[in-house]
Length: 96
Image (tube, rainbow, N blue to C red; front, side):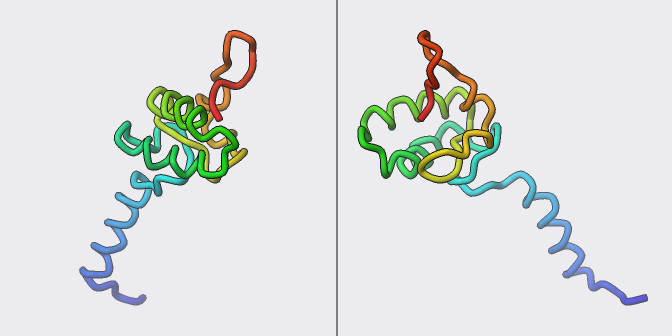
């Protein structure tokens, strides 16, 4: 059986412990962001929007409630059920 050095083992354990909790700000997932990361994630999400100010307003509101923003500039809302399921009074999606 091969021996594993203490350095390799500590690196492996660090990746397991921190790799599952730290996520890229452009990657979705329920609760994957802190409120201070919403601005950056929404800037990317709304970068191709036809109405960027409106997109940023609603994205920021949704991010602060759901603590997530779906990856990409469009779609992928299934990554964040809260973001996906929040509806306006008219029953339309609230989050861009």
